[in-house]
Image (cartoon, helix red, strand yellow):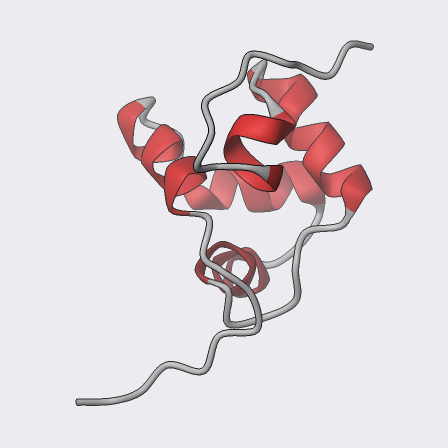
Length: 83
């Protein structure tokens, strides 16, 4: 079995959100101005992490909580970024 070297924990809760809402990873990559490959590495923990500004853009665009999906995914929370 191949071992995966992760730089940070994968964002499984955000990936599930995308899947449940029919959002393609390519849409998020375009929103952030990055390649599909770079976004996939962010999501899976094999590349760099999301910057705070990227997390803010994602949360504002999709109306989701940074705490719930990025900072403390093990704890459900309803704090949301506001414009």
